[in-house]
Amino acid sequence: MARLTEQPIDTEELLQQVRTPAAGAVVLFLGTVREFTRGEQTVALDYEGFAPMALAEMERIEAEARAKWELKELSVVHRLGHLELGEASVAVAVSSAHRAAAFEAGQFVIDELKVRVPIWKKENWADGRTEWVHP
Image (cartoon, rainbow, N blue to C red; front, top):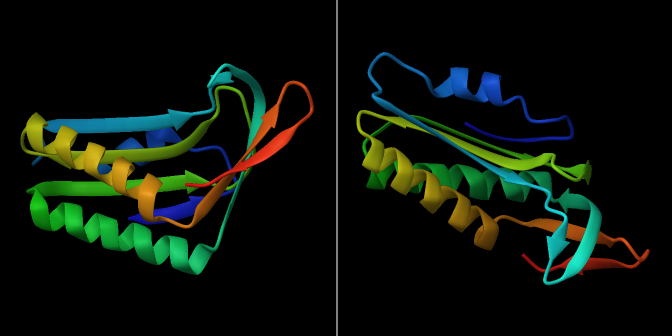
């Protein structure tokens, strides 16, 4: 399941979506807004995306992960809009019978998402400057 939201990511809901008695491993990755990037102090991030293309690409990545690893469930959600320090911008939850597949698939999904999904990030720096970051 892939989705975009402007609301805070509900990690408990996400975990419930991937939990199943058939899974011996559940992995949750959260990408969060950090305070410093390349020595610059960040105060917030803004995310924008073209939803139809972003969702389609997220679903392709999910299908690739399911084809490569024996997964029970997989869910990925990305925030859009304004995020403050510490807020989760992206979450990937994966369940599988064993931990190796869950960890590997989770890393694959977040790595591919960062490269392929048309979501753009604007850094809001402490000195008042802003900068759009190419994915």
